[in-house]
Image (cartoon, rainbow, N blue to C red):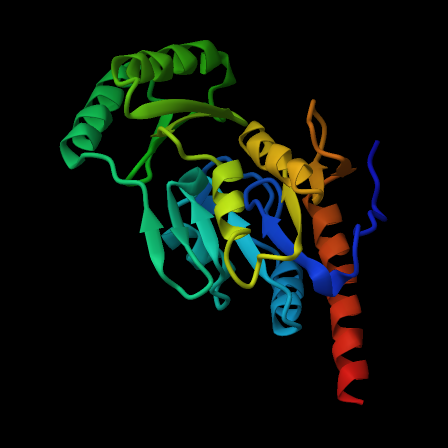
Length: 256
């Protein structure tokens, strides 16, 4: 059941927000570089942060890509499903994979898709994403290619299915793990976490949020462990706008 009037479990000022990007803040596009976040959404996030409410982006994208999409904002972020993280102070933390291994995996993936030009291989530095959005009939082949590589390097890589994509990421990286790490640090610690996401990659985050007594919100259809749902990226924009209005009104009252 979709709910456009989701209520927070505690007052807004006691919350900390974790936001997925593709499919949550921004509509999915045929290729990752075509994605953009509506100005309305960026403005709402800015208002929340100006009111002292912590907001982090947790995405499968690299942090460099996240920064490009949320500029002029610069937010705490978990990139590549938590394989890299920028904390509130701006310090970077990374799960390292051997450079030779990454070169080898990239070459093997590239060779495997040579006969399938409609498959798109995206290198994320510490991970790879095999997209089949433009060739849905090749889902099984894309899965086979990705699974073969993970089986070849089981100590270093794990497979993360998503919407029209199979990602090969460092073992141990997950959105749940990176949210848990953020919640041990200021200014997130002691707050009630709220996480919005749309994909299979977000389910680990929902599980952690539920364990912590927070609010988990699934965007769109599909099976989920999330407690609530919003219908679309547009519904997310409207919901965040409502929270921003609350935050703005609270700041005005404090100044008065």
